Image 1 (cartoon, rainbow, N blue to C red):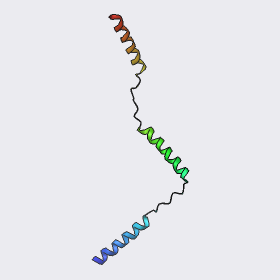
Image 2 (cartoon, rainbow, N blue to C red):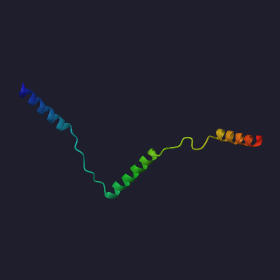
Image 3 (tube, rainbow, N blue to C red):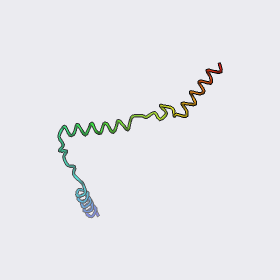
Image 4 (tube, one colour):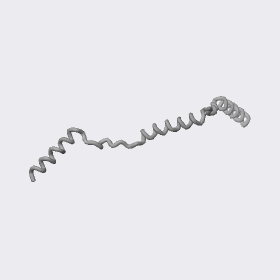
Length: 76
């Protein structure tokens, strides 16, 4: 039984080796690499910048604040 398992294992190993895709070397110039790095940094920074969804109040809210402040000034 050991012989059978050994042969099976060898077949599995050879099949796995045949399926492996070897990576190709990067043949870009240093300038191209630097440009690609800069481009990827720009994309990442745009994604990670936290946006303030309520940084400026909506127009209807701003007008309501303005009118309430004016009324408060008149009442006192």
